[in-house]
Image (tube, rainbow, N blue to C red; front, side):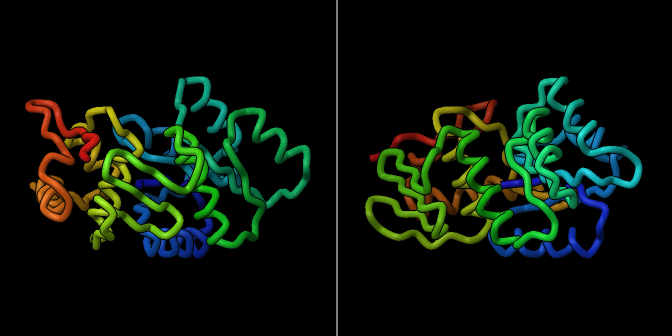
Length: 219
């Protein structure tokens, strides 16, 4: 899971980045309206956390621009304004959820996971696909009834496959969804997929030659 955080408060942003990293969530941080406008042109994210009070523009206007241009990513709005009408207006212009500052990061993480699951049609805390079972709340993966020990990167990858079950993911998409800027190694995706196959089943993740990879309903 890769999230774009747009927040100008450096201390708050650092706290969010560190807390989400502990949960296996990769975060890329930007602090201005102008930076955020260009961020989605060539990058893939699972969700956006957007502060309304940016130093060089209104986050609400940015949200409107994204929705008008067809951006469908889940977006959580952060706002220091606790006024009910302001919060209602955020939802009306396209926010999927909102949090009023100050907030508990644990609640942000829970809301983030919930809107991403809904985006992919996963309405509860469990995912089952053939012999693969994932408990999103406990961050546990079982295969053929056995608990599988995964590294943080391996868990991130299997989540991306689960959220795109039945759809081919390219190497570039997997890199962008799993890593932040300047973090990707030359063959790191292939290495992690090799480990996932070894820990579960070779046929679990199928290589689609010349395109990418797809999760199969392995029994």
